[in-house]
Length: 187
Image 1 (cartoon, rainbow, N blue to C red):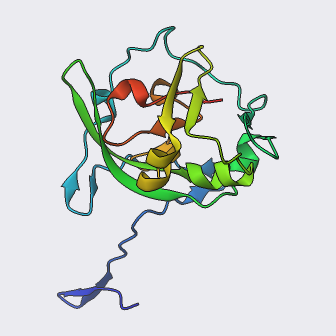
Image 2 (image 1 turned 180 degrees about the horizontal axis):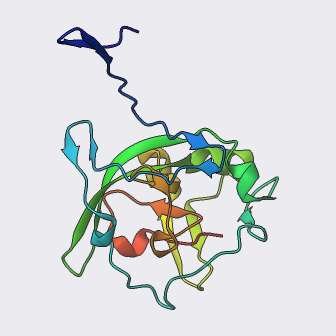
């Protein structure tokens, strides 16, 4: 990779441009940086994502967290947060549409749900995927919809770890569905 070099009155200046990398110091990593633009598209601020959950923001103890994949499955299983991080992650630019009239265009990163579902070997009769949140909220999506849209279970938002207000540790990114299908704090 060639680095840009500027020559100013006999002084050579080397310009380093780093994309998407956060470096730490001996004192620990630097804070994550929120991505404001993705592939030429301006992203909304995190504050565009308004709080309207049934029991307020949930603060999940990641040391005790387990995601259960079960139901009509040959091999139901539990995975902790660290184990889930080993799955392939993908990025998607998706706009959240709320029935209240607001939207939030953001960059989501997470695990394709079908990867988690297929690991459980679902019964051929399965037609819906039901999501349960730590606050007791439940919603569902059809299995066909999850598969056709490559729906993700996101753990990152606009380049940072998903904040609690947006659903840490995981939110269902139900693109093209109203916000009430976007289950936060999924367990």
